Amino acid sequence: MNTRNIYIGLIILAVFSSCKKWLDVQPEDRFTGEQIFKTKDGFATAINGVYLDMATDKLYGANLNGTILEAFAQRYNLDNPSADFYSYSNYDYQNANVKATLDQIWTGMYVDITNVNKFIEHLDADKGVVLSSSEDSLFKGEALGLRAFMHLDLLRMYGPMYSSADSTKPAIPYSAIAGTSYGPILPANQVMEKILSDLHSAESLLAKDPIRNGIQNGLDISYLNNRNQRMNYFAVKGLQARALLYRGNKAAAFLAAKAVIDHTSLFPWIQSTDVLSESRNPNRIFSSELIFSLFSPGLYDVQKNYFSSDVKDQTILAPSTDALNDVFQGDENDYRYNPNWKIAPTGKSYKTFYKYADIEDKSAPSRFLVPLLRLSEVYYIAAESAPDNATAFSYLNTVRNNRGLLDVPQTASFSDELQKEYTKEFFGEGQLWFYYKRKKVSMIFPFGNPYQPVFLGAAQYVFPLPLSETSPR
Image (cartoon, rainbow, N blue to C red; front, side, top):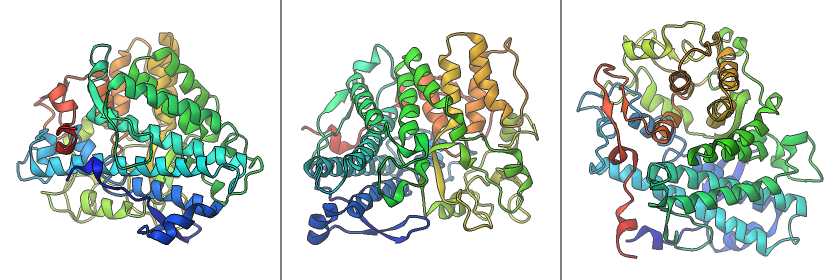
């Protein structure tokens, strides 16, 4: 059955824990489908459903952060053909498991995009009836931002290696209408135009986002807290910077990044004591710096299933000891090193990944959070798109200083130092793969055997579209 013609029902979720927004998936039926948009809480429940579905294993709960994309980026020691993720690290796109996973990602993203479109359709149809104008703007701004966010990641996975020549190649559909079809496959540059258009609209709609000034501006919605766990104004600006840099428009990317950097106080840098001195409750994800994140109830199951020292060697996702030491250069001062990589008292003889391990304080606000956009990435974007060398190194060194490291001198190779920072900063978050593709890196060293390089080109960087999308339309 052609997946683009399957009816996709709106995900309806019910809140059963107000303190953590833990949502329980409920299938749509006739009653809920007709009644959900009759109240403010109904609108909130509907958009919450999209956020929570994005946070499941098939998308950002596992595949698009710590597992699949990281395997593609050669993050783990997967040189044994019996390893569960071996086919991913070898870009075997004809492998049945790989094909199934990429199809799952594709379908899952377009399901959530369709649900966003249905949400927007109801906002427009009921304008001024259920929500105030301020509430309507906030909801629609979030929805358009989410639609752009997911399309950008689809473009970065399934689209061509973006350049002036390749930007006209067929990429993905841009779905902007609620219905049973994703729409036609568009050239990459047209997809990018639509992404930026949605972000421009979202920026305007979120002009009075409470995250900007700490007040509600007449809004009366209970979920206004924890705005960095939702698509907020600064997440939109950061996403603009990410998209513009991917497109190659450095001047515009720099301005968008600066709009976030000028408000760094809203996303304060993690303090060393919160990471290094807190042996029982270390904040390994640097939650204060998250501009956009998702609440993922299954996060610690993913940790247990793939990264724990109890996982069998065939399944575990971990780099070799030599590769890990090479990446961090054995620098014990780096906040990202020892807290996230440890040898367990029992189990493996090598260090395993602890970034998403649970902590003792079950009420900590950092629990269950999956990072999607960090303050550090915005600084890296500003550094890469800066108008001069001094400014570039200033932004790069700002991040390093807030990771316990000294400045790198301006005589160093900026591109080399930037890649080193991406490699250390985004372990378990999927962003290194996107960096490699954007920079068209043709040779990378696996974290299993760093002396045998892997060579990459379009055949590896461009995920094949599902069969349902390449069949005659």
